[in-house]
Length: 148
Image 1 (spheres, rainbow, N blue to C red):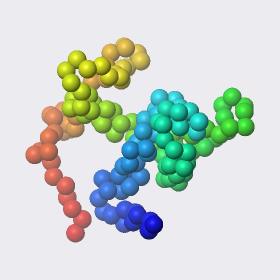
Image 2: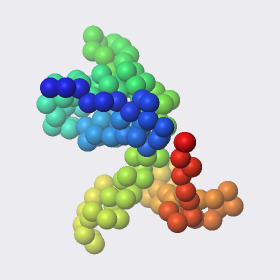
Image 3: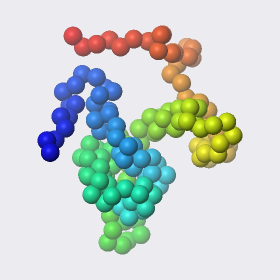
Image 4: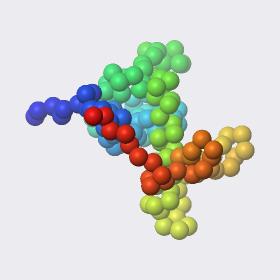
């Protein structure tokens, strides 16, 4: 089976980002890493993904600098997958996707997990792009300056 072309030469940041974390398993691995899941077996149990697919996605996320491996924190022979600073900077992406899902993919009153501020125990406020003066920005108020 031929390998998929990478977007490394693509001038669009969205295309390059999707190339790294744009498949189901990669984003769910990142989500689980934010939830503190670090070991291969724990990730596999959480996701219900085949070992070969998990291994492939973890390798790609490590190669992309989103995750790094380190010795297990409990001193065992295991290794753990830990978010790098680059990986942690995906937090707003995961929160935005979560909030979109909460708004559009659940029926009124349907139960779902909720992201809360540990300090206040209140749900995290809805994220939205804003201008420098705080004015909300929608698609009509923005444009992409294409590379020529």
